[in-house]
Each structure stands twice: as C-alpha cells, then as structure tokens.
Image 1: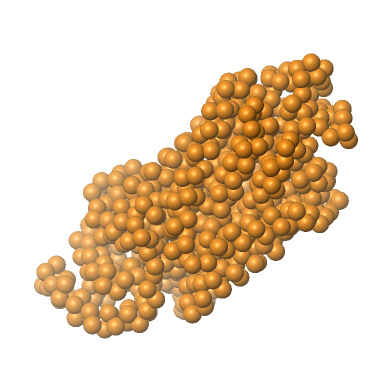
Image 2: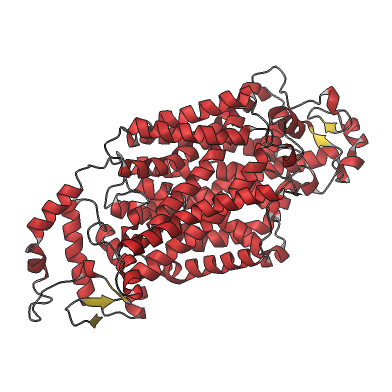
Length: 633
C-alpha cells in the first residue's frame, strides 16, 4: 500500500477514496478505526436513509430463490438450443469444450453475478456503481435479454400451436399430405415404403424429408424459401398463441417477486417429470444407440476450431442465463448473508445434466429416424435450423404406440413451461431496471409496458420469414453482444475494481473468502480465455446463415445495426460519465469515471452499509498486497 501526500491510501493500482480512513492521526491508526467512522455515523445514516426509502422485497426463503434460478437456467436453452448447437458443432466433439467452458467460464460467471446482486440488492444497471463508467454493461445485459426474450416468446407460441394440434385424433405431423408425395416420409410409413425411398434420402439431395419437418415448415410456419421474398404476415393462429404467451409472462410478473416466487416451484420441477419419461422412451427406440453415440463420440479435430469454443461459450451463457441480467436480478432479492455458493453449484450442475438429457433424447430420436430410412449418417436425417426441437421431438411422439396424443400434450406443456421460466427471468431483469428508474409507477404498469412492446417486436418472428430473423437477432443481438458484455464484466470487476477489493466485499457478506479455484478463474483464467476466443472469433468472422443459405446484404446490415445498438449503450455510458466528471487532466477524468462511487456503491441497507465501510477500511489499512495475500489467504 502506497501513502499519498494528502493522507489517502492507494491500493491495487488506483486510489479508492470510498475505502479510506481520512483525517486519522498516525498514532491512532489501527486502534481507533471504529471511533473514526463512528464520528460520521449520524450524518451518514441520515444520508443513506434518505436514499434508501424503498424497501426491497425478498424471497420468502432460500429454496424459493433456488427454484427460481433452476427455472431460469433450465429452459429452452437446454431443450432447443443445446441439441441444435451440438448438432452444428460436431455432436460429441462439442461436449468437451462445453464442459471445459462450464468449469472455467460458466460457474465463475454464475457465482460472480450471484454475489453482485446479493451484495448490492439492486438491478443489473445500478450494480455497476462499483465502476460507474461501465454502467452501460447493465443496460447491455438488458438489451441482450430483450433480444432473447423476444424470440423465446415466439418459440413459446409455436409450442402452443403444437399443443392445440395434439388434441386431434391423428397427430397432424405423423402423416404425409397429398401435395407432399415424392418428398415425404410419414412417421407411420411401413418398412417396405421406407426401403424404396432410402436411396434418395440417404443421398442428402433434399428430395425426401420427414412428415414432421414438412408440417413444421409448410403448415405451421408457411416458411419462405428465401428472405428475398420478404417476411410476410403472421397467421392468425400464431398471433393468438403469441398473445397468450406474453399474457402468461405478464401474469407471472405482475405482482413482482411474490408471484414469481410462487410460480418458481412449478416452473422448475414439472419439466423434469416429462423430460425423464421422454428419455426413457427415446432410448428404447430402434437405432437410438447409434444416435446417442453420434452425440457423445468426439471428433478431436473440432477442438482446434475457434468457432466451436465460441459456440460453447455462447451456449453456456444462454443456458445459464449469465450476462443477460436475470441472475443479478434474482439474487438481488436474496437475504444479504444467504449462502449463494451452494445454489451456484446446484444450478450449474443440474443445468449441464439437463442439457445432456435433452441431447441424448433428441439424438436418440434422430438415430431411430435414420434407422427407419436405412442410413447410417445421422447428420442427414434432419435439416439444421431453429426448428430442430419442433421436428425431432414431434417425430418421436408420433411413434409412441399408446395414446401418443397424451404424451404430445404433456411434452408441449413442458416446453411452454420451460419457455415461461426463461422468459419471466429475462423480462424480470428489464422490469427491475425500470423499477429503479421509475419507483413511483405501479409494478403492473411497468410489466404491461414491457410485455406490450415485446409482443409487438415478437410478431416479426412468427411471420413466414421469421425464422430467418431469429437466426439474425440471435447472433448479432444475443450471442455477439453477450460475449462482449461478459469480457467487459470480468475486466471491470477484477482488473479495474480489483480482486482484493471484491474478495473483501464477499468476506464481509458471507463470512469467508472464496476458494483459490474461484480467485484464479476470476482474475486470470476466465477473462483470458474469453478474450482469446473473442479475438479469434472476430478474426475468423463468417456471416451467419440459415440452413446453409446466405442472407441478403441488407439483412446483414440489420444485424450489424442491432449489434451497434447494444454497443452504443456501453460506449455511450462511458462517454457520458467521462463528460460528467471531466477535469483539466484526461487521465484523472478517466480514473475518476472508473473509480467506485462512494455514495452509491455498497450494500443497500443503511446499517449493513456502515458496518461494511468499517470492515473494508480496516481491511484496506492492513492489506499489504502481493500475489500470496491475494490468491492464497
């Protein structure tokens, strides 16, 4: 620790005036820390009380918070996105980078955001008073959350469409229509019919597809062959389904944390009952073993492709919902001393387990479909695309011998519930920011505004060209922005604010410092790994495609515009803070903008805040610095 002339101490490379013991006589330092701070107690308490008149709601118990986190992280990202991402990146080869990324990126990120929210009891925007110039990260998280929830709700509308269709006497995706003759294989086709068409299907020339795929693309979506034809108008059926989806989100969020907490138990537990039943059915199908082996067998050459690692990080972010705001938001409603580390290990482990269940189920079904059409190449059975879960899962349900309609209803109810859990959490992050900015407005009014705006935007995704735009927004507005937000989040907390300062905050809150594993991940492994992958991804950038088809130039322009909006929120806040705190020296202006805000950073509760100031002041005075003290003590 370096002493400056004005009596302020410098620690970890920058001056942090929020943590100094000002005007303390040298002989009194170390013995009268409490007396020095107590002299300011009355004025500080009155100031804090005036700024914290809003009493923040809390979960009714730790279990409620755990269920909410499970409902958030175990959602469409596991059942829809994970199998599709694994399919795109070599099947089993994807599991290796995914697990490595989970250990060194996913878990550290989840723990970090859980700690940040619980420590501050504030939204993901106001949390960044620790580094005021980076407040835009909170708005960037809200932006990615809105991009994701806008098309998540569209996927929910598709599940409702299928749910209604499941009540028919014969499942409508199980048979071929007359207009599909020569290009369709029905789920109920006989073996001899299958064998006649094996050659054309196995050749991969696209002349033969399953009835489930044709039903999804030609009847449900009425999909265009090219985005050049425009996006078209949504069908009235999907319009109603989308409205019901957003109405459900509104119903869960309208009463804030009270209604969300009660719904969390059902949203977290119910999907597992159906998921396990489907897995049991999938592994008993003929050819399922081949499909599962295709899923888990690694292709080692894929490990050297940076895009596979990039896909692993983005899938980890989507699956765990880190860098999107929900984890900070949910943990901000927890008790200040809650043991969040236990919840982190449970949720992240369960999330991976769920992804593997979903992957084995869908690839088991693909293996069965390949077996029936007489091909050993699993990759040629179903075209890639965001509709993978709406093709392969329905295909499996139509092959059930006993009451397939019942299983179809249960499955699509499960899919809808998973979607609600994810969408509610993503919308909750946006809603929490609005509550902080408009504390006098009624909660249900703010929720209604968010849901109404989201409904209008989501209409684009249920048009005949909507799936093209899901791919576009998912890449430019979701994954690309999220990974940049993640890099900046790690750098801001551990390289700007400082690892030692953060460890002091955690020690005060939980009564102990995180283990060596967390410290090395936070300070070195996680940010370095993410920066390297981001640089490789930018250097080897390839425009996204839909089913292997390039977008027109104007569509990529829209994608880059969406990406620019997310970046503008971050850069704009940095410039605004620097202008607000400008001085004669540019260096001093930047230092001040990235220095913790003494008035706003810290615990939200006034009494806890005073104790925290005393604690960190004493820690800052006794801290001698060095590698050993930071990482091993």
